[in-house]
Image (cartoon, rainbow, N blue to C red; front, side):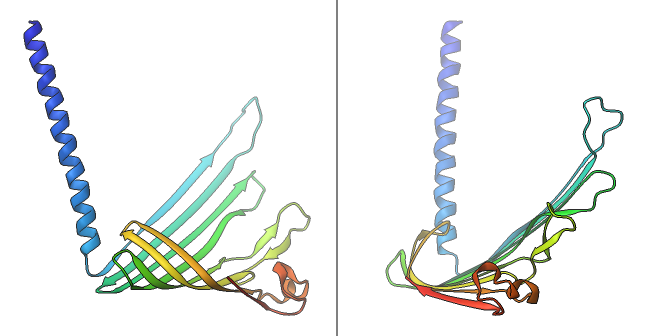
Length: 213
């Protein structure tokens, strides 16, 4: 009986080792295939979350609440010969209502686009240029004041960053970008906010430029 158990354990161990080796080889093969793909690779995710809390005669107290959150992540990457061009777009938005008579409050609001173009120098190193644009979709408010006061808006602020440097890409899933030359522009297109000098602009101006390394 002991001999049979020992034999079964040995077979089970061998199967685990073989399975682990196959899995590791599959991962390596998939990485190699991904690294050699030419042309466009596109994809993305759409996430929508809805949460509701309803309390009835709850002794400890509390308020009913409804929360809605959405997230969109899209990518479009191009690779051919010595050219690599990566593009991503991330959009997030969230709302929360807490209490029967309360209105919805914004909990998340972002629009983030990034584009990076590179020309291969060595197997893993590229000359590269990057553009990043960030803003929000709707008006932001300070909910601690009565009435609520506006503190941000669409394109107020908006940030445009341009950078030139080197990009280290050993594979399709890792990238390290170093930029000795960068430029950043801050936009505040909302007249009320720009008049107060919000987000570092000169009062009355709607943009500010910064350059550095």
